[in-house]
Amino acid sequence: MSSTLLSTQGLVARYGDFQALYGIDFEISEGEVVALIGANGAGKSTLLKSIMGLLRVAPEMVRLDGRPVGGSKPNRMVSDGVAIVPEGRRLFTGMSVVDNLRVAIDHAAVPRGTAWTLDRVFELFPILREKQAVPVQSLSGGQQQMVAIGRALLNQPRLLLCDEISLGLAPKVVKEIYRAIPSISANGTAIILVEQDVGLARSASNRLYCMLEGRVSLTGRSQDISREVIGAAYFGGAHAVA
Amino acid sequence: MQWLDGLVQGVLLGGLYAQYALGMALMFGVMRIVNITHGDLMILLALTGISLAATFALGPWTVLMVLVALGAILGLLLQRLILNRVVGADPLPSLIATFGLSVALQNAMLQVWSADTRSLGGGDIAQASFQLGTLYVGVLPVIVLATATLLTGGLDATLRYTRFGRSLRAASADVEAAAMTGVNPKGVYAGATAVAVAILGFAAVFQSMRATVAPADGPFQLIYAFEAVIIGGMGSIWGAFLGAMVLGISQSIGFRIDPGFGILAGHLVFLLILALRPQGLLGKD
Ligand SMILES: Nc1ncnc2c1ncn2[C@@H]1O[C@H](COP(=O)(O)OP(=O)(O)OP(=O)(O)O)[C@@H](O)[C@H]1O
Ligand SMILES: [Mg+2]
Image (cartoon, rainbow over all chains, first blue to last red; front, side, top):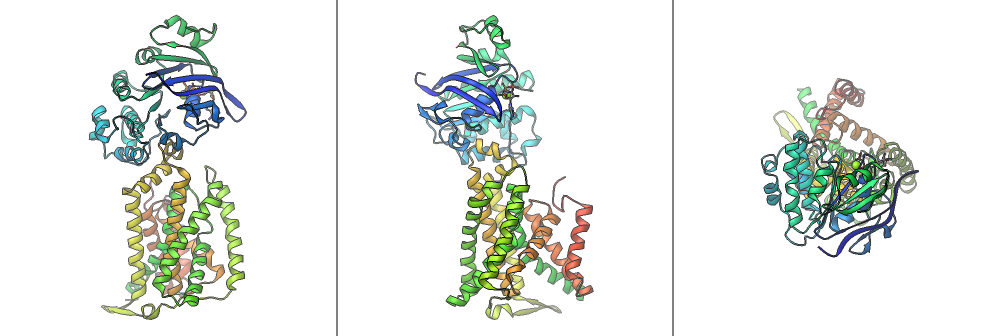
């Protein structure tokens, strides 16, 4: 839990003329769970996309094991041990659950620690074992989210990026999905959790970053930061550091 | 009797069209690209094969192996040098690029091979036939049909059960998500085009054994491939096979109604299906 796995330094990102991130300094250590919160449009997904290589950024702005990797292609990032559960799940429509998962197995990074297998994913989400032959588009939203998580895990990541995995799901299903987080992290995998639900984000993480309009407005240990301070950082006003 | 004969000949002709159409269906399914040079590449392979056979005294099956390998290399180059730059959500750049390449290829082939029609000597096999009841069936067309069926089944199984096939289907469903799952889109695209053009190696040999080829023939083969793919349903592999059969049968039956009506009958059936079932026979929604 000590050495820095991934960091960003002064990360800026833009969509055409529109600048979405203004100098993000971020870091996460091996095995750590870090929550990323912030209002709609704050830039959380943009930060994940920049890390994953989906947006063009300068090489030194993102470092993995200290190596500059900014702007590497997403498939390179996967083989370097970074996987993502993307916003909106983005499953392979028309393919069965197990084929969706196999695509990840086919292109997995070399695992460090215990490797994720189909069986372990099915233990994590038992319903997927039953549904494995079913085309993904006919699953419920929660089941689709489980496939998206399973797919990312089978890439054998050292760092897992999760973009709003609770969005649009019933509270019971959200609970079921968040129950998987500790077992993923027990595998030594570091996790970045983008989450709208601040309470959930706090309880599931070691540290958190709050973003506001393309900047980090607050960062600190999740248990040490009070709700009031988070509120101020979330909605603007005073820039707080705890 | 002549209708049954028309049906059988049509199915056999469909075997050749299926070999044109498979690669087009694959490329469209994976990249949403309609490759206008599809027919010209087939002609290029055919003319190359005919010249190789003449120069080195090669038999047709040796030529086949050389052309399939050459087709794969041509496909890789086509993808790396041209198509990877124009593939994307907008279909227009790839249409324009491959249209330009098609014109350039035809002119280049005219320079090298002149406008003469040529063919590949097939030995005894090209002439052989056998009697089936009261019908006479050529051995070569049967080989063509069997090859087309094996190619279709093989391609379908590759897509379903192999690592390469899964990557292709994933990239076809959502190329960015596929990249986020570790798939290298450019590699997958290059593989798809290599397979598509390699299949044209089969078509090239059979076309030049059964009939003749000339540098300007490409666009006709393109139209047949295109119609077969549309009839069957864009992007569906067995759909392309079925579409090729429908096209072959339409032409063959049309030819028996009136020899001048054969090709037109194929176009009419194509238009009819486009009007009644625009998604194609096996296409979804
Ligand atoms: N593809 C895009 N093109 C242009 N602008 C974009 C694009 N994607 C996001 N943006 C803009 O970038 C800013 C940051 O968006 P981002 O999606 O990173 O926010 P977010 O924090 O993930 O929000 P949400 O909670 O709604 O997912 C927003 O102003 C958004 O409008
Ligand atoms: Mg977002």
